[in-house]
Image (tube, rainbow, N blue to C red; front, side):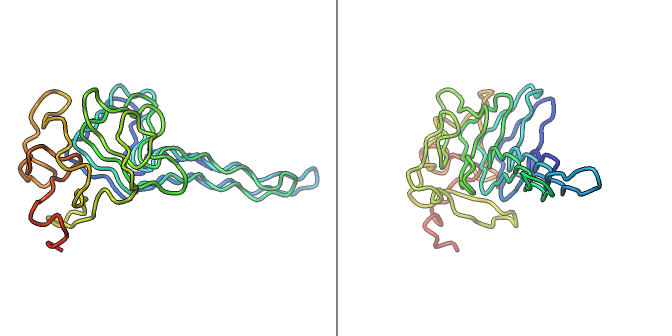
Length: 224
């Protein structure tokens, strides 16, 4: 089966920069292995399933740069393809390997003030070189993203909202993402003055992690 790379974004070469963005509910699924055949000479096993790299983003080793700033990644899933059915032992081909439900990085992907959540299917959120920028705060549901703070209650960091007809996520009441950014600057030391929905940053004493600033009026769910 063929390989799947990046359910939302595949960076084969060049550079990537993501700021104030939500990437969610994507998947990369490897192709299934072909079936074995029977002929007059031999019996064959099924083909191998294809690999899946990066349920949301795959950055190949040939990429030069990958920067992630004030962004949210949620609900990604990488699924290896199934092995094909064969006609001889071992009858079924091997399943494809899955890596990085959210991000699979063959070169360094630097994250600043971002959130990567929603562990699924036993595959870690990050694979490869996904690292927190020095001195920055980032949040995740497992310890696969280097230098990220791991939330003690996976799956309770964010809530889905529908603002400006754009599906998005913002921190729930009491989330460690609220007011957790070291500052409101990007990786080039420029001020990030608004969030994904053009809401002013910060809404509290500090900027929140992720793409959406918490609205203090509605954060307890009253707004829904």
